Length: 364
Image (tube, rainbow, N blue to C red):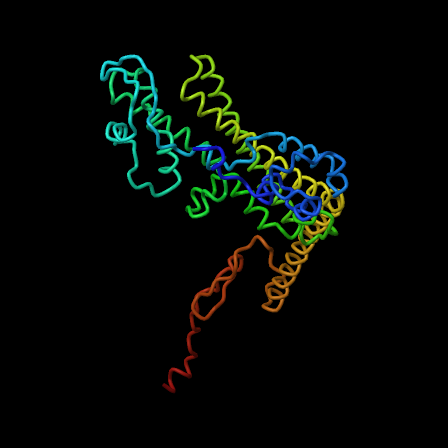
């Protein structure tokens, strides 16, 4: 593919990647119309439009990198040309210098997606043929090669998904969007735009809980990026110990460049969230703590009052029924027939009528 036909980022997209989109109009007024013009800006120009010190460093650092002007999607575009591959002989095939793409599709049909439906399948087709053709000489059988290729494919596409552009997963399901770091950054910006877009707004106590939640989610996102970058760096160091110029080394270099570009986006976003979080904690941190303690104290006080009222009500009910003088450890009275008996009161003696006088017997 000709370098003149490479898809380039617009100035607004380039600034959004650096979390500097608010300076877009000011840069246009300054005369910066395209991404290639940013190299002409110096520190004085950026101070003039109101950039902060760290924002200036981020701007100048990315402006000096040539690869930042091309889209991430182009980095992994599969060029449809004849693959020139030199490899030693293997037990299941001789080495070939010219390998056509069609023949590789037939040979590795178990790994090639004829009609890719999602990001995983599309990204897999971008590298799977060249990866297998370059590594086949390392395996004694085709089955072992395919088993290795499946594991290696999962490793690569997971990192590609984490570093992908938001546009590449725009039509995908939430499963893919949740693993795309740029997509998650945009989601957090949208969810918490009421206090992230304008950092100098007045601190409002009603937003404090959402600020804390945003900080925790941003911290998790930053941790995800750091873990992915560490995993990639470890693999890259292992590959460097092998023979140089391999297909795996070239591919990992592209991933590392994409990771460096994404690093600026993540650091800029997390820095903004951190500044908002520190400002809220500095203004409301102690007050919120005291308020929470006061609420807990009132809850305990109300609980004691409720228990006291309940005990008083029970005592009043017992006094009205005439059993208030009874010990509290005595069982409740039991009802025997029509006579209410207390456990400590002995049962009455059985009724035996007295004998009638003799005169009454005579009358009978």
